Image (cartoon, rainbow, N blue to C red):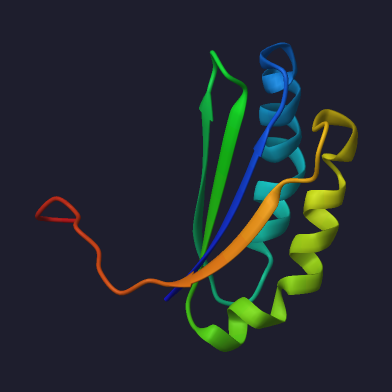
Length: 100
């Protein structure tokens, strides 16, 4: 599995706009991508820090979504004073509760 991590910082008063855009645009679009395994959006309300993590079944699916991801990040341009950073990682470990 592969993960794409997008991090950025906005003003705390814009976080609800970031959350809404992610929920209404990014999440539904991600579900349509081949090999998509899930995504999480995390925020730190006091500082305005935002972290998004998307998971992809394999490296091929991950790489095939680079342009798609760039288009998603571009939607947030007016909400972030500087462009978010994007990183990619191979997932090599996972811990989940028993029974899941």
